Image 1: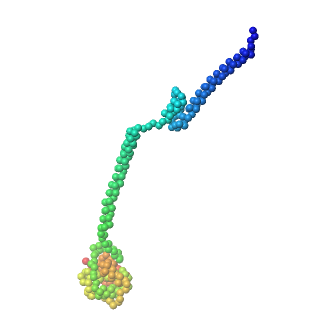
Image 2: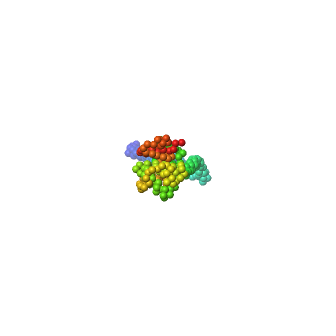
Length: 272
């Protein structure tokens, strides 16, 4: 019996071809599953960036069902949890209560400032009172001396026009060349003599205290200013009473209380 080898060979080829096609189908099916899984795993990283992609993919890969079930699983995992209205109100209350202690803590810090302001008010009032207090008039003198009399307080003398005119001419005859201070010393001696005697007449003073200078010379500016300072302003050349003066030699004057000299003229108060 002759065997048709060609037929046998052809039959083998068919069997081999069928096996190969079946193997290819199996490989294609496995590849398709792998590719489908890869395609399903990749989009999870873009659906929800704040969610773990690996956990979502693994949950989807292990889930049983089709593509619809997988999509539902992904959507469920990506949904943001809803907060109940009561829970939101509770959190708002907690936040408000948390801010209250801060307000209480800031209250004591502002209180001391008000206290400081109130503390400064008495000091300001005291300073204002001190400023409003009347200040005592400080007497100034033209010339300082070694033995001032702190109790010296002459009375102001009012002059008539006649007495003023003759007094100015008398000062001009006694000290017209001694300058402003010299004229003031002589004018003070005349005023102190008026206070001592209680008489404001210039004629009386000339006779009583032995003035010999002429009274027919018009006074200069220094004389007028000095007489105004002593009589109108009740000023004093020195802080001590002056009663008499001389130039040259005088034993009697030197027995009195020496006060000051101006040029070659020496001024005295009466000895006690």
